[in-house]
Image (cartoon, rainbow, N blue to C red; front, side, top):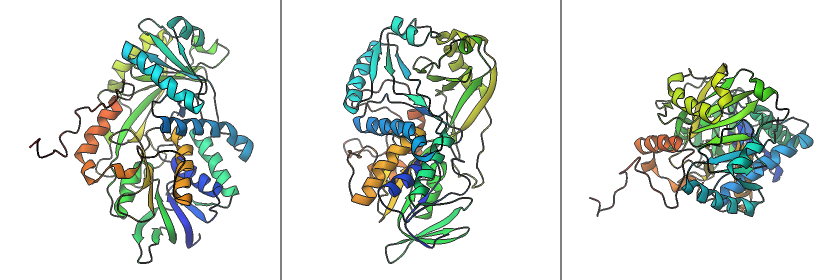
Length: 425
């Protein structure tokens, strides 16, 4: 293991490896990634691998679009399969407000070149013949959507990074980080110490604990996310082509085909947190106990939208931690108050966002600026006031409203009051 590097990244998930790949692509060859387990052994390995384009922020849309585009090309570059399935996706609307929002989002996607078609209910059935469209007013059909194998996609970026000179050290936990008088960072690991100019926290579910080593608080909460995998469904097996992913606000679920069955992933209204008192460092390639009671109300509504699910057998329930911030956006950029300490973490859909986050943070680190406006992602949008109770309440609220309509200038009650003005007092 080297003793000096220009940049060290802590964490080997899609976010950390995405940054390593793009730093090497920008010409920084003296870069290293340190991972306490194997690559993708945190939240990445149990992710459903969805790659959505439907998002109302122009800059976020650019990040999502770039990620999907890269996953399509990586196998040709690296020889490592990413498991890309370009099946498209449909977001469903259940009221007029959502229909209006769909028109707005389509305008955003048009700007980034992401194809989006607004479908009437009868047109939805032509694209997804197993959907019961009664009660839905419109579908936003994004043809460039799909899903990928999280492990394969991350490994492909790792191959690309190594091919450009980057190094990856596995099964080597970082135990401490210290800012030296020289302005460099000392990264103490189980297998030795690395001195670096730039240090990046890409530690996923452990990003708060890694941040504490440098004396910073990270406004992030691990939410428990579950999805079920069904047994073979004859109607799915008989289709002959892959169904598009569906996002259903009525059930607050996503549906995607998995071989001849389905994956159903709810965002439950009785959301559950995990690891608030810290996570054991040995938590690798591990899952949490399933909780079917929290899933049942959502699965009942799923059967209303997908009648074939009503008689389907359940093969497996996957339950694991996914990071969430108070506003649902990841942390990308300089840590508040620290020199050359960068954040690349706390993404709730890191498989989608890892490549784009890596691209734009690499631009920031290498060139001092990015080609997009990163204000809504900048960690400095928060202070210590946003940690603790506020982060907890807002992250829960954000999780529960994952498929809700988000209005311009909307402020929900969760987490309030936290920083009242004198007139409030």
